Length: 74
Image 1 (cartoon, rainbow, N blue to C red):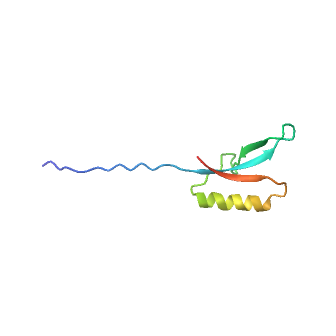
Image 2: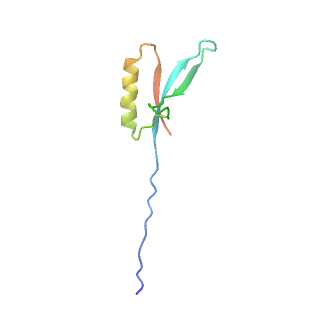
Image 3: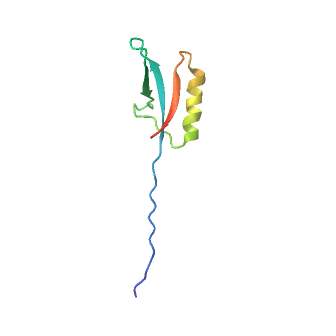
């Protein structure tokens, strides 16, 4: 017997989010973006926009040096 089947292939897109910290270069006056790292010195990636924005808000509220933080989709 021969069975005919329909095969569907789903491709999961690995959309991730990172947080950028902007530091002012005193010599040039330009803002330099720095990607935040995790405890293992790897790029700190977030699976959802909401989790990245929540962490960004925490960093922003605790910044006493005036750093600005931004969430970027990668």
